[in-house]
Amino acid sequence: MKIVQTFALVAALATAGWATGASAATTTPFWRNATVYFLMTDRFANGDPGNDTAYGRVRDGDPLRSFEGGDLRGVIQKLDDGYFRDLGVDAIWTTPVIRQVRQPFQEYGRSYAFHGYWPRDWTAVDEAFGTEADFAELVRKAHAQNIRVIVDVIINHAGPPIGEDDPAWPRDWVRTEPACDYASYAGTATCLIVPALQDIRTESDATVELPPFLIETWRREGRLERELAELDAFFARTGHPRAPRYYLIKWLTDWVREYGVDGFRVDTAKHVDPEVWAELKAEAERAHAEWKAANPGALADDQPFYMVGEVFNFGLNNFQKSVGAAYDYGDRRVDFFNYGFDGLINMGFPTHARATMPELFDQYARAFEGDFAGRSMLNYISSHDDMEPLDPERTDPFENAIKLMLAPGAVQIYYGDELSRPLVAPETTGDARLRTPVDWSVIETGEGAAILEHWRRLGRFRNRHPAIGAGKHVELSRAPFVFARTLEEEGIADRVLVAHSADADFANVPAGGMFADGSIVRDAYTGDLCDVHADRVVCRTPRQLALFEATGLP
Image 1 (tube, rainbow, N blue to C red):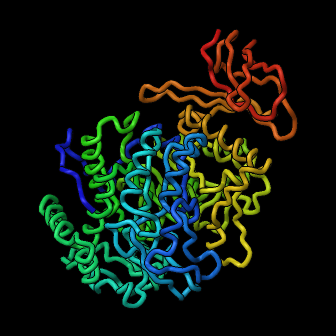
Image 2 (image 1 turned 45 degrees about the vertical axis):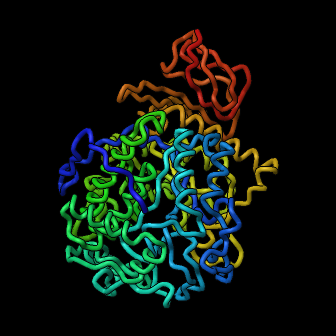
Image 3 (image 1 turned 90 degrees about the horizontal axis):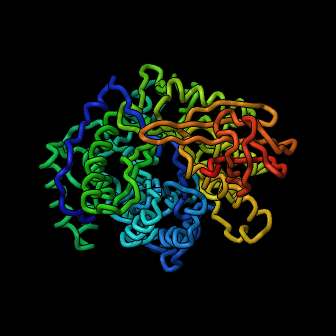
């Protein structure tokens, strides 16, 4: 990967604030309210059938464990169609598109690395996903719509060794024992999470040489001299030892420096010493500043680099292994917000969302006024590896969307949630059933179009109103359920009123002082204009959901 010329930074990067015991910085309202669309690149859209058999791969894996053809070109086409913009998306998060192991692996059934979590080379795009030019175009077109791009990053492990085509990494790079027992910090962070994977020695400061197979790959592709020169420059600038984690940090942050990636979603965060993530964040912020200096005005507004982590079994309200805002290893507690993370994925949401909407929103409001004040948590109803999603049969897609999109906190839409993409697939096993390809023809059906439009209306409302995810929650009524959200922070003054009833229509609700008497407000869900009288919002026709926003009209 080539890098752009280094530009002087306006201010020095301060990493001391991420040291052990430091206070976590407040995440901006934008990222605390963000709607992030998480797509599995291979399963989203096939824009270029010509790369479907890259490296000689064929569809001979177990059900839904081969490459299905989705690629960066397919994502670009959906950007061109305005799909993400119409959904109110603030950021697109892609599964890793770096080069993967080429062959299928047999230990858990015949499976290819379609998911992107078995890396072979961190410096190139896997040909099944496209090219670096495709990636650059995706980021550029997303930015043109003021949509950020988050990429999935892996430091914990390389893909499994599979013969001559996918050789093993040197022993001083990876550990082969012990297996993780999850009984302690060491039994989680410095161990093998999956015996088949090659666990990087991320805690080591020992100097290591580049793997011979990687040198040979770069030589064959005509970029060996450039890659080596870049590594020399990186280690000379940072003074870091040539230890495994620093090679990976250099390679990952190149994607930020060269293409303007806006954030990282960190895979397997709890399996790596948290200090490593602070080091990654510092380098990513430096790279982001350099890219912004080289590309002024590429985005309509300025937001800081965002790093969100997957800490499995962690969530709001002391979910499973959570204690307040810290993850409990048993013999050590780690607050990942103190190590460069701006947000964490809220793995408790599918469980919590089984409560009623008033109960759910109330407990989340209290969490964001307590341990998680000023912090970003990414709620979701389904994901690529959570085997207990909310409503796996998709029996109530309208209610599920309201709970997710209007709950306090940021939002992760897993690709196809907005289309009720099946989470149960015949003949599949394990997490493959969570990873079905999108059937875009469902939009042509009446029900499919209605579900998508429902998500779009909720998403565009969130996009306009940071108070939804980042504001203060006040309940005004239970029947119908009416609540207000207000946000006054960083020059933002935003207020909204939401009313919902699954049982009976309503035509007027308490305004809670959100809007001046005599003013006109808009129901963003229907587009209707409604009046405010005697501190009540009065509409001319009944409804079951209303998203009220000010119009500025007297």
